[in-house]
Amino acid sequence: MAAIHRRPWLALLLASLVASLQTACSLVQTPEEPTIDARGHVERLVRDGKHAEAARGFADLAASTPTDHDYFELQSADQWIAAGNLTEASHALEAVSPDARAKLPILRALVSAELALAQGDGTRALRELDQIPAPTQADEARTYWWLRGKSAFLAGRPAEGVRAYVEREHWLGDPAAIRASREELYAKVRAAAEHGNPLTPPPKADPVVAGWLALGPVAVELARNPMHASSDLNAWRNKFPQHPATDSVLAQARTELASSSTQPEQQIALLLPLSGRAELVGAAVRDGFIAAYLEQDAARRPTLRIYDVAAQSVASAYNKAITDGATFVVGPLTKEDVAAIAPLSSGRAPVLALNFLGDSVAGGRNLYQFALLPEDEARMVAHRVVTDGRLQGVAIFPEGEWGDRVSAAFSEELSRLGGTLLASQRYEAQRGDYSDVIKQVLQIRPGKPVPGSRTGKSEPATHRGDASFIFVAGTASATRQIIPQLKFHYAGDVPAYSTSDAFEPDPSANNDLDGLLFPDMPWMISNDPVTAQIRDAVRSAWPARTLRRDRLYAFGFDAYRLVPYLRGKGSGEGQEISGVSGRLHLDEHNRIRRELEWAQIKDGIPNSL
Image 1 (cartoon, helix red, strand yellow):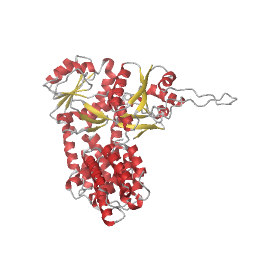
Image 2 (cartoon, helix red, strand yellow):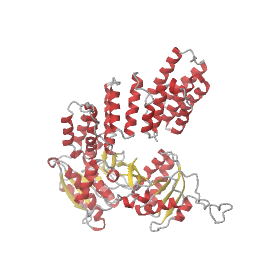
Image 3 (cartoon, one colour):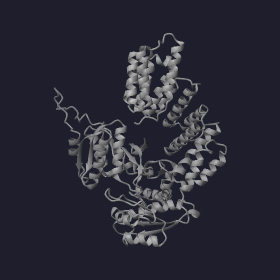
Image 4 (cartoon, one colour):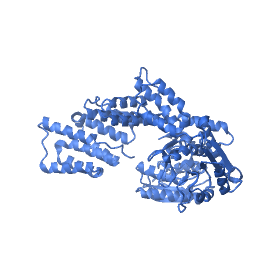
């Protein structure tokens, strides 16, 4: 897991505390000159961002200066957190003596909470902070309330998190720092709403706290479906007219809201295969696109014309759309059609192609590309296993072109990130028994007979001990058979990962997948009310056509949302859309990249991570 973002608070805090101890307490002796030189060198490493080296340097200082041992071990733990090495941070914290809770109570609690937070355990972080009263020194108080706020949100206690962030503002004298804190709090309440955390204000809640909690669902609406958010935003502003979020945070939200709508003078052409072999796929994307179109206020909707590229060539459809007055073209859908339209799009109306060109094919500056690629998800899985600290593992891929692409993407990304794929095996998707593949990739060894047993009893089978994960790629039906067979072969203790292809929104179909980790789009796994409203509306409108094509509706919905985003060239560097198909941003190659949410199956239900 990546470390939480860095700040200079702890180094300054520890330095000032030790200075005061050395002044006030004769038992703390001034270090000799070599130690001072060594300490200066380590502090330079901190300033240069060389956190791992600094952590080792502080550990050496802890060993060489017994009087300041705990202080330097705390510094070492903090630097290991900054370096992202939480294992070494834990070891450094374990080396701190029990006396530190009495002699350095604030620092001990803050570093312990910081480590728990970096490890994703908000409840433990709050327990650590509960060991001390709220500090009254500015530096300590800013840090205490910041850690307490983040920990409370992580623990699913948003009301407590909001209170902590509000309290922290009392210790922030800089207007820029206050604005940054409010923007961070806005992101926290939005995430809490997205994850279904309770946002009801407690009895007699402060109006500022109540306003922040009420802003959570509005923030989700602004992010996921801004075309439908104006009324909710205005209602919130009328209820909390003097709220501190109004001036800074919502000013930016209103700007984003204005830029998220297409203009009525625009004409959008949608090019999709609506007959022939790809009709069902094209119709699902079209219906999702129209669903987003209808979410926009009627007075601001552009003209929409739809062209069937299966009934005519894609070049003819594109030229007809331009002749008809299209100012923006969305589509086509297949790789072949995207390649055919690429040479035509330069210098004319912008095109959002719904697939990626091959790596060797160049697109013009007016051609943007958006796709749901399994290779991208395979790379996300590689990132996740490394982030989870599982650097060695095995994989099972289906035979065929799809499996080749996923295998190559996963293997390359895992290697790039410093991980190792110990072994991989291929399977035939139509087979029901994958025992041979599992036995080979995990080196399953049958149990030895129990010595002296008269009944022929054997010890349990064993598997290779160097694999810390197994990546299972394939369809939902194949994965539902492979995961139980892994458990049957005593490999249920190895964490299993997959792509979104493994999951279908049917609890009865996913009971055999318990424990599986996978990335997927919010449309499929999010419980926030905004996404649920969009999803339910589409399913109600086209109930006979939604089965097994949910992701295509989400794809079409976000394609419409991307039109104004691309009109503004991504609304500035670093901007993104919190779409129903993922968090979307434009890269330097005019490709829309997606970041997905992570979930783990428990009792057949995906639980957000």
